[in-house]
Image (cartoon, rainbow, N blue to C red; front, side, top):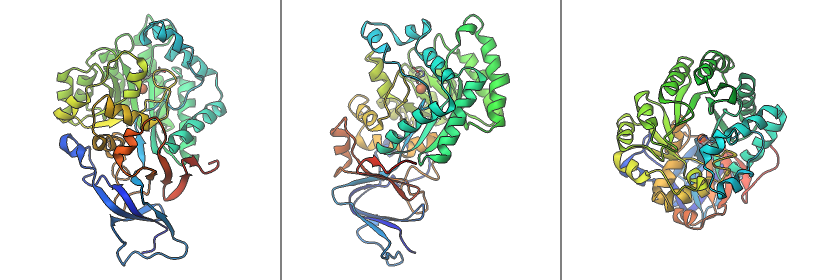
Length: 425
Ligand code: NIG
Ligand code: FE
């Protein structure tokens, strides 16, 4: 078998070997580490992962690109399973409000926050949304992310929700990063339905969901289940209706208040519950029982500046599979930098570097139902690979705030070199 690319002498090769399912407890510490590793790619597929030299049945020729991995760490392409990638405008005006003590939910209640991004997104053209999201996607790719989830939810009317999802669809077709779409019409209650939220829930169920399904625009459905936004009952109704259309449930759960979001996620067997800063222990236990993935978003907690963070250690101890994500959005988490999230996860959530890498590879791939294709490096899986200019995984976490990526390979092609995207896509 002929190799197109070989990476050899790899100081640390993180394979994430093991079953294609969420890793829990002690399993999260086993990253299948190989020192002096070697990896071969043919087309868009991994054909060999091991130590030392290639076996004889893998041949190289003049065209084979040989990359020297001395002093480098090689991992699966990172997966960011929770973002609000496509939106109009920005919200730096909220910085001074926040510094003056105004709370995130109070800004929303006053008609700002998510609702101000809704206005900007409604106004923006398809092309404007596309160009802005493409720029963010390039940044994510430069940070090593090869698959990303993207939610709608800044339309809150049928046309704008569809516009966001159509942008995601076109980006997925044209940009190397894979985009997995989530319909999140239930992201906030529009001002005109403030006193009749049930009517808005009816619109989501009877108008939006059928249209999203008709164009096949989303694999998942998400709801902001929170005090003052969507109740547990409304969330259940929306997510059950979405399931009828084949959209799998995920939940923004217990971000600010303990609200029964984790319990609901377990009850309806959501794929993931996200945030979970205020989740109850009973809710976490229910999630562990059902194998619901906790997508934790420490950059959001850091940026909300309340000092409260999800209890990752408790979740791991109880057997909840943990994934990590940027939650990239213009309000609570304006950053595309998953490596910074990994730093917060380690230093603030007290996750070990091994647990962190499990969370951003195989567990986040599971959160997007892509575990059979990506999330680990083994023969037959897709060649989505990051080469970090770091001698080991600890260094990537320890030397924080910068981008450690040297090369990104997506579908067997080099798309990032020296940490920069190679031209326009
Ligand atoms: O996950 N909490 C709800 N949604 C986003 C924030 C969206 C925004 O502030 O624009 C989140 O944090
Ligand atoms: Fe979010």
